[in-house]
Length: 283
Length: 268
Ligand SMILES: Nc1ncnc2c1ncn2[C@@H]1O[C@H](COP(=O)(O)OP(=O)(O)O)[C@@H](O)[C@H]1O
Ligand SMILES: [Mg+2]
Image (tube, rainbow over all chains, first blue to last red; front, top):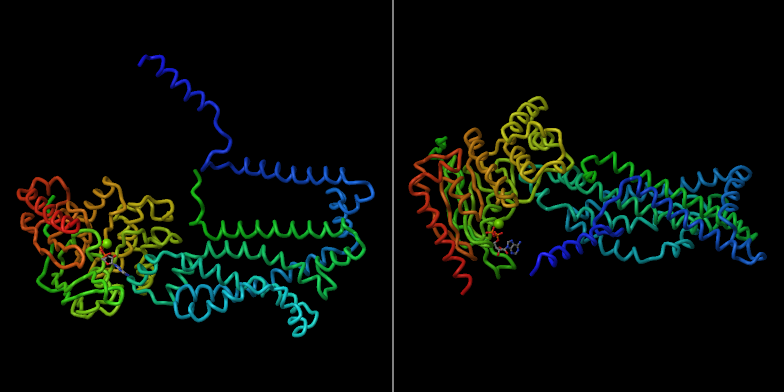
């Protein structure tokens, strides 16, 4: 073999190397890059929406309003229809019911994860209940509570609590056995281990589960506020629907989307500051 | 440097005809093991993988109950885990949500030791395991060897009578393992514990232990129980000192021969 063949092989590999592929496995982006790509993605979404609006026949345009007119509808709602009060009521229903769901699910999930008999007792009921569509409880809840806030919050709770328990059970079971055994050999009590070892170890995963399940709670919001509701974002959208005000319906969707994104950010920030020990190591 | 271990004649751990079966008695992991371990001794459990070393240690720790037989530690029958028997696991068990210092103080907190005393003893132990500068770091910021040192300091902080170590350095690379072994010799000179060390690393066993209990392959029985007489009752702070002892090579060869016997039995 001559030198030239070696050289050409080296050149060939150089040629490959000079053009780094954009989509490499296992790469990370800086915060700035992530934000720019995110903005591009959002821009593309609204751009496609605008194009779709422009391409819609003139007489059908009111059924697919442009993004700008949806934003205008949202500001008009806020300024003229006291929409923030409805947002407040919806937020109260979401957060209130989610708080109650957590108060039930966190201790129960951890208890089930720690003690096999409790798990064996409760798990069949929980697993079964997850398959029941929450909306099917609406007639029952209306009979029990009437068209009240309690009825709507009960629906939101039913929609998430069983999933939340199942997720927290998983989070708890995922805690390394060695951590529990190490605590046992140190003479820690069962209560101490449940709260300060298993609970602490599982807490970042539990907050993650909560973050995912509150997103599900948002998906139930409109269902809860469509039936027998005078106030809340869902009720506003239902009323707009009756008058075919598509821009107002979309403004409602947009409002829920914004609330959802803000909720997600709050959960992520809370996890970041509450669990400094769990932060991913920065490269 | 050569150190003189402090070994009394008091029996610290007594294992009386202990067997352990799994799968409802269908599988015997440990078969009729009896052992007396004297206060201050460092005993290594050596044997082929899966022979039951960990199982015997876990029964001494109280994490597993013997199917037959019983175990006494310092005259009391083992009923369950307790802080008189500290255990170091192969997996890293330093609590990730606590800093090194908080980890080391955790065990003392469980025992109800007052904060000022915890702080003082914690600091002393952190320095003993060379973690002074990393006292306020979380385990995620530490290397494997450092995490293991946190676990060692946390266990020693409870001042247990017995130290149970299950392949404590098994997950570490060779150089770090060597550093940890030498550190252990120094620590044992200060803390003076009765130690059971489970290892499949023959050199590690010869370096650290005063006595080696060699197990047969499954079901685990004691094949040989030997004192390392060539060490003349000494421990060595450097591995080179050990290697230059006359008789070292014979012992190492013997261990490899025993290991080969067990592994070859398995192959047939
Ligand atoms: N909980 C268990 N159930 C069934 N078999 C087990 C269990 N724990 C250990 N064993 C078996 O017992 C034997 C001894 O295991 P172990 O004490 O961990 O071995 P060593 O530590 O010597 O490698 C192995 O064959 C292992 O598979
Ligand atoms: Mg083992």
